[in-house]
Length: 310
Image 1 (cartoon, helix red, strand yellow):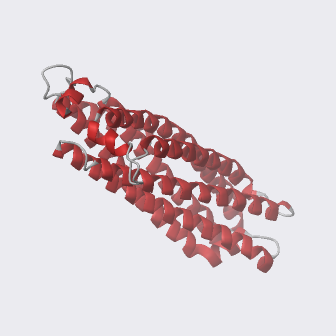
Image 2: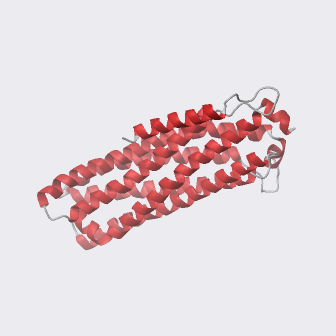
Image 3: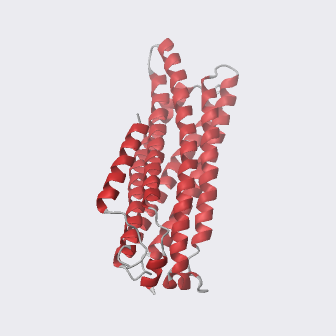
């Protein structure tokens, strides 16, 4: 049965997997840039040259705004490619007897891949729009005087929404990761099983990272909204001085997320390679992609990725 499936299964596109890896790298790098931008934004306010601080602050708010907006749009692009690859996995599940049988079981332990992928897709899109909205309101942070408090509170509200969105996405990666681990025990191929197990473990790491980052953002929200009563008119230098450690923790957790997201993209490539490589064993159908072709493609996409980060 398994061999019949692999003769029929032609849904793995290794180029799609490499595109997914590329977009995961951009996604992680965007988060890294956000952490750096927020650190710059709040650390520059503690310098002594008031004129330079004003100039740097305006520049840093614009940079942070751009980075949040870029994160939002790149998340939408990643979601689109991830959705296509999820369809490949659903096709795999539908055509593999052991998987489809397990999914239809009524004992409460069955897989609900389609539902879990749709939930991730929905929450991913929502978080991307929250990031764009947050970026647009970040530009307004350089407003001073009577509008300062209003801008900060609005920004904190956006940050709270973004934090909640990231927490939902973290929950989704947790569920999807658990699904991948279950898939890793259902095929007749050790190579495919191990690829799903590796992918599941990577998704669980990203889930944990997203939850930590979400908590970091929410802590900053609590800092800002709570400081309104203590400071009267909110001033970013006072917030930076009092809550600088929270921003440094966020930056560190974002670096960790960047690392694990990059590794997750590579796990998707390995899964695609396992499925495609298994398909090559049949006498009909299957992929004709060679190792050298795959390596050349990976190098090409890596160069494109490096160029996009300039």
